[in-house]
Length: 436
Image (tube, rainbow, N blue to C red; front, top):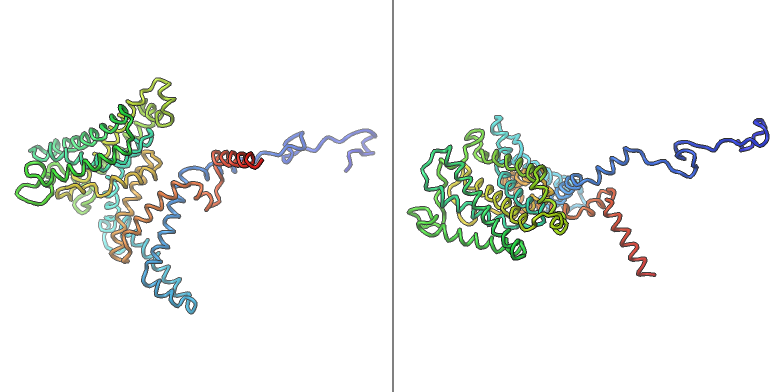
């Protein structure tokens, strides 16, 4: 229909077209996208989606490594073009068998009878996760304040040494001996971490260098203690190992002796997670700590003592690492400790904190994941002859992909964040300026 309709009379004009595509009276205006699309975009940009996809990609790469290192796969690959189905079947058996064994070793064992035996792998996972979560919380607190604490190993060792020196020779009932030993270990770790914070605050020394050096100081100090009679060495023996933790100082089993790796230390770790969440997200001190982590200069200008926050952060970080050490020596399977009591947990805690995005409950979930990987790796090796190193590779890949969100977004074609768009626009403008 034309704008001039003879039936409507000469000179009469039809009203301009309007509708959802034109956005009203302006024919050039485009309607905004549906709200559903905007919500979906925000979800796909979120950190937890990147974390989950990073774990998925790491598992896929881990499966490829399982297939490559499998003897049956390599044998079938020799005649791939003659019978490709054999190779594909061998690959499936290797990957499925590996991850099925990991599931049986870390969550639920379907090949045994009885509920207690079937659920035991999950309790092992939680037991392995407890010290990882505690140490990871310590690293995460420091991260939130802008400090790179890689000294959890030394803080764990000093916590164990202080507990051994102060409480192992005491004759106390369990109701007093357990909390007293626990507090001694936490205090030892807090003091060791607080020294780093004090040096950082007063001298400006870099916390990475300080914590590396303090790790070695703690290691050699504890090694000397456990091979020196009258200090920490086990009486009447020449072995460089401490006396076993007294029974009255050990955490009781949480669900009985059929689950030896899960004790009340895990409950203490849950309480520690609640405390860190409240401290960092709900308390006024946590607000000041986070402000320093976001911008120490702005925090100082607003009246916050940056040096004091550094000391507080390292005290909390050291105390949580000391709690991890207590989970190691107060566990119900403890027979003594030496300089290797940390068992690599001090460095794994950095990975756990990164995976958990330095948030209390994120660290808790990441610690359980890494506990499951550790518990399942032994079953993988025993039943499928898959090297435990494959699990370590998967852990490293998880951190690698989490540290590179643009890579994950490129793999899964996820929308870019506003910061990435702005950076791309700046790079384009800079390139255009250079070419001009």
